[in-house]
Image 1 (cartoon, one colour):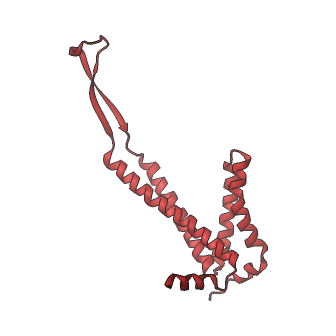
Image 2 (tube, helix red, strand yellow):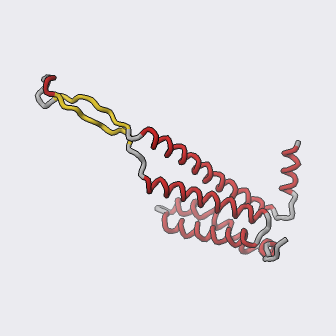
Image 3 (cartoon, one colour):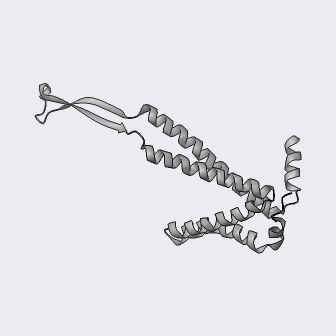
Length: 168
């Protein structure tokens, strides 16, 4: 019953439904990046603990069936993760998780920086979609939600007025 009251308070707020949907979407994406951060920390920690994993065995010499002339051979199955790449992955997911969750919080609290930060984030998402898309379907699917969110935030004047610079 408590979750129903919390849900009712969230839905019956002074924010329009579109802003609530954008907050939910940004929170979901931020939670996804937070999950990816935790998963990459676990995987990188596990890989650094068990690598390099090598197998050593005897390989026969070119003369077949002459077991007296064998030589040792090592095969590395797993290599240790690259330190610089691992730090980049961790920082990438950390920044994206914090950014999305902070902007969702700012929109939820009707802060002007949450509004303009989300507009800027969607513009960056649009530029990234144009620069990294390989075909028209990928471009459409990468552009659809950022363009929808950007159009809603910029062209609905009632929403823009509710995000004034005054601190409440």
